[in-house]
Every structure is written in structure tokens, then in C-alpha cells.
Length: 292
Length: 292
Image (cartoon, rainbow over all chains, first blue to last red; front, side, top):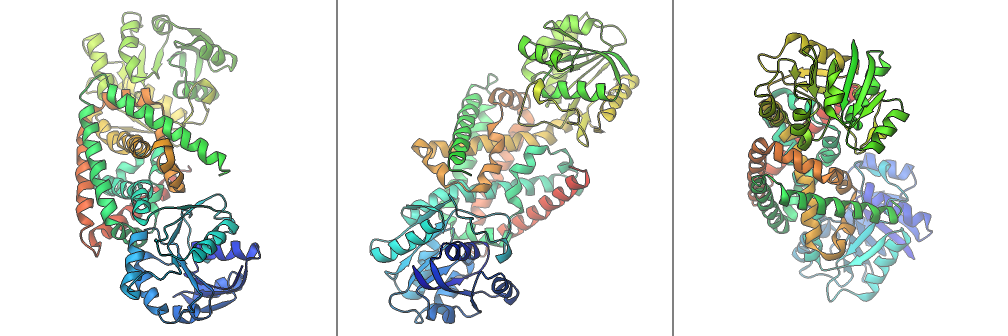
């Protein structure tokens, strides 16, 4: 399916795709590219990649497919490094969790979106990172959203779609703006809430005394506050427009809830809590159907 | 330690205390009281209680200690039912998750807080309920907060404290208002956030389409939105004063975050995320030290 694949950023996301494609016999050679030689050497030792380089231009030069699984903050620099080094038939795709910002970075570097560039986002991950955390079945049953533009090559879209299907994922297409709006609500807002709740609590009492009185639910609720702060700063800034709107809406919702507490019957609260429980339980049914 | 214990509300909380005291050999006879005969019969069959009744007055009449582990919305009615039926030496305590509202219910019924009443709150629970979910070690290493008043009998406080220590808990004393403020932040606010996030998402798109794009973190983050809506309506209404303040503060915090997104360096965001991650990681260290 792919003769030579370049994976730029051989961490959990890039490493897992490399493993899945290799396991499926869908790739000939894999060139890994990254900044950290320790991680690249581990990737070589684990057999996740066949060659290693710290130069995205060299990695891209002979590849038929380039998969960029780097932090959003590094995208611009990577596009600049591969510009002019790519073969005409080469298909480029990425795993950035905000699509409009990646598209803007591409436009800044290339002047326009190349027809062979297919923006993508696999909705998968664990709290671990680095190539050692990569899993051959990370994408099994997970959603991948592709946000091609109107002039994106049909052939390029088909190839990227097959790459994800072979890796076990379910592929959906939508507009970049729609993707960013959905992810703001389902992922970026929850992270903002978890980070700021923990921070508010930490500031309420010295010596973390208050955390002693946090029950089990608090642990689950705030798990995502242990995520990488730099990565999340980048994501939030990259998706600032959609996220600002979502945050302000949610703040308004909280003020409505505060007002709803004035009704001593709690009619409105019960309505919200009941609707939410039903939706959450349906969501759980949905993911267990998907074999998760 | 206790000859006759009355447990009013033989669910997860009441049943677990009964089991723990029985296992420790700290109790002679246990009288269980509840509204549902099916649950009471299960409690008898499981040996969690020795006698069953649906009349709180009868349960209280011969007890040396009365433990009320009922929903907040049922407290007033239970106090009214046991009034005038209690022996002078009998010690009463409860497990209500809001302390000021329980104290107000006691005052409404008794005119004042009896010296033998020790308000309490074990910070423990699972997502399951009913006597079958009761665990002998539910309170092992968990915090119990007692909020005695200035005139509460020292002897009564000591007995309630010993009950919890024997059950494996760590006991802390504080004022009821302080308890309600802390729990508003560590428990009631997170539940409000989880319920309203799920509800906002459910309303964003028909057919729960949006939940398909929720990643793994979302599942943990919203687990508490599967909690019992009636119980949480009661808790939120009972703690409305502290919770209203906390909700409005948090809404302000979200508006600040929305503004912080305008700074393209994300300096403020990174500061908040980094502080939160550090606090969360310390919190995790803390609970693993406690053997959880």
C-alpha cells in the first residue's frame, strides 16, 4: 500500500500508526523523524522504524506518505522544513488535534493548501507518551476525523482513508471548523475545566489540605488535569476561537445553575441531572458496543 | 462498644458501617430500618442486620446508638419520627453530605440540637447503591468529618469517633459551615460540572452524534454524571449557599480563562495548567500514601 512512509514525531500517535501499518503488511520502509535522539534510538531498537533522522526535509524527501504527528506548536517549522523536498505524488497527512490552525500553518508556508495534503485527527491517546507507549491496536475502533478541502485530491483522501481503516479506525469526514467546534466541546473544554478546578482548589487552602477531603469521583474527574501542560496550552491557543465561545457559553450555563438553586424544589436541576445521566448512560452503551 | 445499634437507611453507607462494626466485634445487635422491604429482607439474609422495621421510631426506641444514613431529603421526616422515642443516653449521628441542612432539620424538629447528636459525614462511596453494594472495608483509610457544636456532649463525640476509628476511617473535626464550603468545592461543584457538561453536549447535536467524538478522558471526566439525579438534586439544594458562591466564582474563572486565550503566548494558561498538574500529581501521591 505504501512503499516508504515518513513518520514525523515518533511518539504515542506516530509510533502506534507505524506499528499498526507494519502489522497489517501495509508498509515497506518506515523513516522516523524527531528531535530527540534517545526516543529515535528506542524506536529503531523496538523495530517501530527502519531509519532515523532529525531532519524533516530528509525524512520527507523519499517518502510516498508523510505522517506528521508532532505538537501543534511545531507544525509551522516542520512544514517549512519539508517545503520543496517533497515528490509530486507524495501524500501528506497529520494528527493535529486542531484542524484550522494546521491548515493556517500550511497556508503560511506553502501559500495554499497542496492538493495532496489531507488534514486529519485520530481521536485516541492514553496518558502516556513516547514511542514506548505506542500500541499496535491504539486505533482499533477509534474515530479518525479527516477535514479535506474542496480541492483536495480524491486519490490522496482515499489513500489516507485506507491507512486509517487498515489500522482499525472508523473514518469520518467533516469541515475543519466543525471539527474544531466539536473538539472544543468534547475535549478542550473538559481539559480546561479539570485544570482550572484543580487550580482553584489548590489556591483555596495552603498545603493541599483541601484535597484530603476529595472523594473517589474527584480522582476520575480530574485525571485529565495530569496531562502535559505545554501540549494543552498549544491546543487551547490553537483553537482559541471555538474554545472562547464554548467557555463563555459554559460559564453562562453555570450562572444559570447557580440561579436554579434558588428554586427550593430543584425542578430545573433535576431535569438537567436526569437528562445528563441518561445521555451519559447512552454514551457508555455506545462505547461498549464499539468494543471499548 | 455498642449493645444495640439502629441503622436508619441500610444502603451502601449504612450497610458498610454495620458490616465494619460487626466484623470488629464492636456491636451486639443491629436493627435495620428502611422504606423498602426488599432491601431490608436482603440485609437480613446477608446478616448485615439482625432485625428489620420500616418505622424509625421503633428502630430508635431501644438503640444505644442511632446511625442515620438516609438521603438529605428524608432527614426531617426521620427526626420527626424518632422524636420522643429516644432513651436519654442514646447517641445519634448521621452521614449526610451537607451538614448545615441536617443541623437545621434537627433544630426544626427538636427546637435545639440535642447534646447527644453528633453530625458526621464519611467521605466514601462507590457508584453502586443498596445493601448488596455494602463493603466491610468501605471506610478503610477514608476521611470522616464530624461537625459537633460547642454544647455537644464530649462522651457522645468520643463514642462516634471510636465507631469510625474501629471501621478504619480517619476522623477530622471542623465547623459545619467549613465542611459545607469544602464539600461544595471538592464534590458538589465537580458533580455540577459533569452533569452540565454532558447536558450541554447532549443539546448541541441530535442523536448523541457528538459523543462519538469524545475521547477516553471524557469518559473519566463525566463518570460522576451517571450518579443518582434525585440524590444530587437534594445535595445541591441543601448546600445551595456555599454552592452558589462556588459556582459563580468558577464561572468567573472560566471567563478569565476565555480572556487568557487572547494572549497568543498562552503564558497565563501555561501557569494555570502547570500549577494544576503539580497539585493533581501531589494529590495522587497523597492518596497512594493512604494506601488507596
